[in-house]
Image (cartoon, rainbow, N blue to C red; front, top):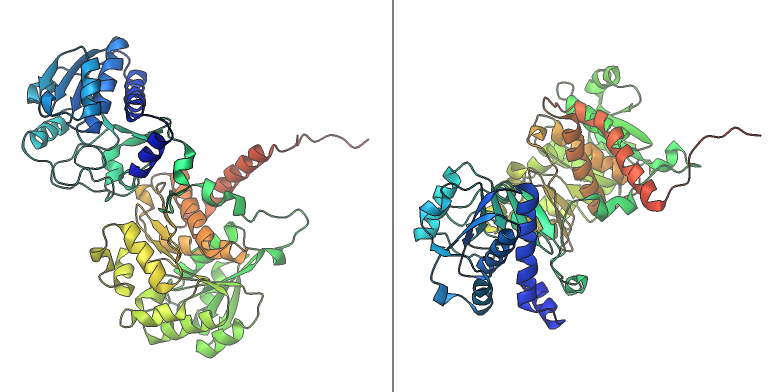
Length: 497
């Protein structure tokens, strides 16, 4: 954002114009949502406070009763902020707690995304008092006390916003937990910064959405057939641990894989066969059996790990999967089995693999990395580079990272997605998309988004078995979006004459 601001100023847009546009956007959001509210605007000493002065001026012109409080001395304001303060013709109160009395809405313009140290003194007291009030809070850029880069509070005190108005692009604080919760609903406003500002960006960081991968979705071809849509294989565990593989297999089938097979140890064949219909069961015995099975090059994508058990035998099965040349997804036990030798995992995988660890599994195969990294984004990126493959660091803010540094943060996963077996379904979605020819990073991003959207569509009470059954409706919504973008022809059925 510093670079974007500098680019805008270099192109002829003044810093004052940027501040005016930002404050105006905040005022419009307040007025739209609370048209007759009494408003307290809390301004800090920096540019965030300047946005607050602008917002106060416009809110007053809209007819709001506005009370403005400044943290610090008017004489110490920076040049742009001082200019905006001179345009404000109302009173300027000190940052006393009484400024919060008898107001309907509070605008938090104390500190922005560039805050680098915890709140203290009067500022911390004001934020503490604000959080105890039952009034809506609109944060400017980010809630005060929240680090824009880290996505977490810098100290004990941080504003809990109802909604946040930010500018040009979201920051990590708006997508990473717990920052995303503290921001409330986040709105991104255009303040005149040109898209050219992105051309020199090296962040390679996005919020997950269909815009990143929809053009690569493997939609069925009207002249196609099931053999052209790939053949996914999910490696099952022993007879007492087969459910995870079946969840993954059903998800792969639902997401469009032309054929799906469960590679089943011989002792589990009857259990698996009795529980599936459209999914095939292919028996194998040990590493040699799996190696022989995967020599069939039509079996082009394999998921291994769910329910397989932890130990040397699973490590050997992983090696067999990787030596087959098939695209692969390693999850659960396929990761934990490498706890004692993470480097062996890195050697086994390549750019045609996807690892899907939750934080516990991540710690086992990338020991100490989460703790050493500033954010989950940094941790996932480093892990992807170390392993040389795509990594999905699962969680309420799942991060998908590629070895080349690209990273995506997913934000559509509801809390009820945290249920037994949901990770197995995710593995199945990834392998099903890989089987259809999607590249690993795109397949991972798409699968994580579909996973979250399916959970949102079902709602509370979700169990893992429900997830695959929501996928057709989610895919249908995406297909309609594609048709609308492409200006699909009238599909009205007419009689043949």
